[in-house]
Image: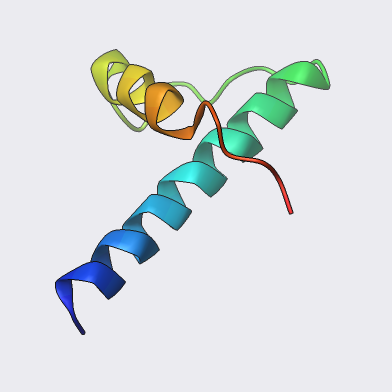
Length: 55
């Protein structure tokens, strides 16, 4: 596995996790508690995926 392949796979997993969690909250479901990642990671993921368009 190349570094690029690993990076793009990791980004996809993070993007999907944020999208799933966001969709749950939008449907009125409670957020995952305790959060599996610290708040700083969620903020980083939000910034990284801010311009991603869903398929």
